[in-house]
Length: 379
Image (tube, rainbow, N blue to C red; front, top):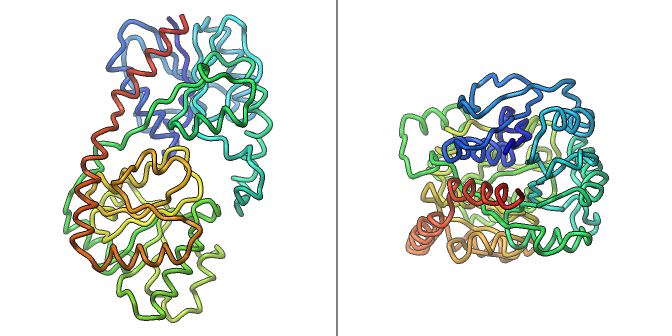
C-alpha cells in the first residue's frame, strides 16, 4: 500500500494532536517495513523528528494556508502520488478527494458541533475561527470517509449522534497513551530552578488552564481564592498553558487580590518543566467540562501525582477509579475534594497507587498496531 499521512501537527509546537501524530508516525515506522508512507507537511521538519526510513518519504506542500493546503493542495497531491489511503489526523479532512483514495480521519471530538448553550464559546479568536472551520468542513467530509478513528467510547457515541450519516461500524475507538518521559522523577536541581524562575513555593496545586471556558479555569481560581480567604489551605495554585496571561481576564480576576502572589500564571512550558511540575505538585486539578480523551490526568498519574478531575464526558472512562471524580460545575464538590486530598496523606497515596496501575492500560505501540490493522482492513 501507499499510505499518505497529514503530518503537519507532528512538526509544530506539539500539544494533543501533535503528540498523537508524532507517536503514530514513529511507531508505524518501527512496526511496518512493508508499506510505503508519504508524510505531508506544510513547513520544514526543523527538529528532524520524522522517521528516516527507506519506506518513509516527507513532502512539504505549499502554500501553508490551512484551508488551501487541506482542501486543495493535499487532495491533489494525494491523487498525484497514487495513494491507496490518506489518513488525516487533525479532526478535519478534504471535502473532495479522488475516488481511488480511501480517506481515514482521526476525529478526537465533535465539541465544535455543539450549541453554545451546551459548551460556552472560547474567548480566543483563533479558537473561534477553528470552530467555525471544523463546523463547516467535518459534516461535508462524512460521505467520503472510509473510516473514522476516535479516542474514546464517549467520543464515538458523540460522533454518531452529531454525524448521522455514519454507522457504528464506520467509527473505531483507539486509545491514546502518555509519553515515556512522564514518570516519577525527583529532579531537585530542576525544581529549584523553576521555583526561582516563577516564584513557586514547595507546596502547590497544579492545573492546566486556558481562556477557553471548557477548561473551567475561572472556577478553579474562584474556588482557590475562596479557600484562601477562609484560611483553609496554605498551598499555592500554579496554572500552566496561558499565553499572554497578563492580558487575560483570568489574571485580572486576581491582580487586585491580596492573594495575587499565591497564584502563579505560566505560558506553555517545556515538556521537561511540565514533568517537573507534575512530579512536585501536591495535587493535579483538572475539572474540564469536555474531553474527547483527557490526557493530562494520565500524565499526572504517570508522574505519581494524585488527581482530582471531572466525572463527565470521556474522563471517567479513561481515569476510572484512579482519580477523585467530581461534578466540575459544583463549587462545593470542588472545594471538598481539594480539602480532602490536600489534608489526607493516606488518601493521596491511595490515589497515586491507583494511578500507576491505571496508566499501564494505555500504550502508543498498541495504538499504532490497531491503526495499521485498520489500514490493512480497508484494502
